[in-house]
Image (cartoon, rainbow, N blue to C red; front, side, top):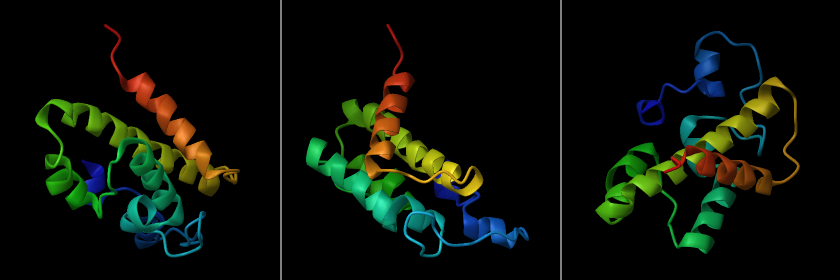
Length: 128
């Protein structure tokens, strides 16, 4: 998992590769790292809070927590669904971040991320 391995090209990793762009998060203007973007940013908190309100799923604290004790806290029979939902939400955050960084698109609402993640989640479920 690239999220857990820390190899996603967030701005801090891009700067290490001599990228000359702004290293600040487009959502909150703090330094963008993997930890920040997916767990600490106000955008990530909003996404995880919506999941908590809707499904009573607490926010993971980090990538290692997400793929470790956090995931193991769910019943074995629903872990697959949790992984799909988690992946969809992380992917939605990533896509909105990329839109902001590379296409200069602003996020009109944090709900855009939720809607995008929900759409992705439905697209990932196999049709039987």
